[in-house]
Image (cartoon, rainbow over all chains, first blue to last red; front, side):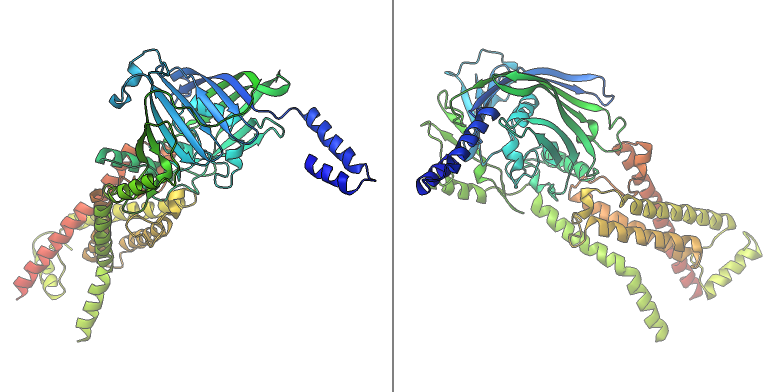
Length: 398
Length: 179
């Protein structure tokens, strides 16, 4: 805007209108507040209830820091308690979303939560997930995901590819299908920072996959059964029903920014993967109360977690490939030189093409054959009475 | 029809001229009538509740059916409801003789059996929606719904199958006697 105003001044020396305009724009920005990058610091407490809506099943407190840049870049660090020897850091750098999970100890044994040791970044083992574009923080704890939803999801939700959806099935497949079945109707604050002040959640299965292929990658028979079961249960649920809400209150001034300091997420059992006819379906299933503790001005946001420790094992979801016969959820590789790889990297592309060929879908070919033969038998059996009647008419006629 | 003596003989003569498939006592015929009546009610109930279930907007309705991919689940359910209600009505209407009605029942139950077998073999644990959403009214869990629908299916299939076999055996015996 300044650029336009100055150009106009040089072209039209006799008019002071452009100067007045430039002054007004500057004054407006001063009044409206400084749009510098911000760091949000807060805690969130999650309580999960039983079907009666009262019995507490899970309760824990999460702590987070989230940096947000006016350009849309963000970086979030989770200090959530349930896994004391694991830390998550995830960010969007304008091109990719990168998630880093730092472990102390060997993550390959899959039992890290039981080894409570102090996490130092120097000795950490890291696991990274890379997605193209701005993406939902899939692996974070629900408390951290709620923080992301409040402070960093404006750009994500206004993206036409997402249209108010939480999580994108085309980017990442999950065993828990719930996140992808909810449509959010949000109200963001109109000025900087774009904070989610209130929202309603509805069950919406319009874009939900029509078969389990888009839902998860079953690698064995048990997974296959579980995924199919979840999928069919989800598909039978009623769309358009309200299942949860976000509210905010206790408005405070944080370094010149007037924002709500308390946010509440409430989800009923109807919003979970349980049948619609379950008793207590409208009871409260989940409550998260987020308290914003501080908002600090920061320089800029890189939007990509740093490399720490000896090496990183990467799950690169930019190479995800799914069709009727093949499923490759991600391309796995190691990074030892602390350099992120481009999705155009020729070695990675070659490896992806090779892995794709060797990733058949579990159980698919056999199922298709059974269904085709079975379908033909049903059609023939359905027409059997007609054949018999025609035969009888023919024999009577003769 | 009588159950013994000359009456029984008359039945045998009748069956030779215009074969009645099985030599039936009055109590047996009554039982069979009751069985067909109850089966008809089950079929009509299943057909009507399926159609009522279509009113609720559920995403799976617009999905292609997993066996007949050229049909949506909604179309298949509508078709199945139509066939169920039609057969149920024919069973009650007594337009056809007992043996033919039993065959009709066995035919439709066998269609269900083949369809269920395909789902079972292809390991697709779709919950059976034979009765639409009617069980939602009673807040029954999935295992109970499966138990009821499986019981109803076996009630339609096994006795009707046995009766058809018995009819076939009796009519072939009658034919031999007539020859």
